[in-house]
Image 1 (cartoon, rainbow, N blue to C red):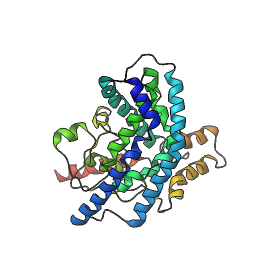
Image 2: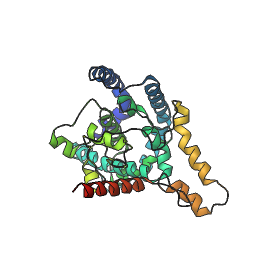
Image 3: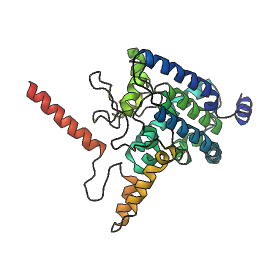
Image 4: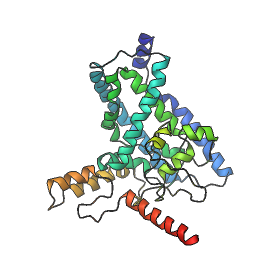
Length: 310
């Protein structure tokens, strides 16, 4: 079975390429449904920008996958266990891969160097299936560090890469407003459109919540879960939007701002380092506003309102 799997992966393109026709069909269906539901889900320039960023991601992904395979293979030499390619190892890998994704995703909201790549995915003020295509051009070259422990455990590099693709394919369909809340048992265990709408929202109550890939359980375990509230619709985009449909500008805007901050005159080495590693919004003079500051302000206001209403 191992030989068949390796031969298949060596002669096959990225699994996501196979999913592209399905992505297109689902977007066409969403356009139709959003029109029927009278939702203003799509805007031509915004969707064109998302598609452009998606195509760029596919292009850089060709090189990034080669690098990823090389790095995973290197670490696989030092594996602690011999894990076979079989049904139980795939089930185990689904959970371990998702655990890796959760921490990569969470760090990408808490560390500006990682946010410089991830911000691309949050840069649209719309929320539809084309938003799922709005992917970074730089992240694939370094975010894989969160998966290096898997080949060390003994998972074959091709297994790891395949599951990474499967996870991204799953996450495509949750970028929509045309699907409401699903049955309670599904919402309790899996990431859903409802959970992911929260993740893409800029409302203080929703900021930096629901980092799940496939399973929402990680957010519940590590206390980053927030349920979608019916009377507080999500407001999409960024705290400070880029306000551009140019894919190149969107892809590199935060990198430019981050390095401009880090090379300002009069900073200490530690302050320069902090501009790369502290959460988005951090400033050396203490004037920065972080997502937790906005959330704390909302919580304080919310508790005051509840107290006054009693």
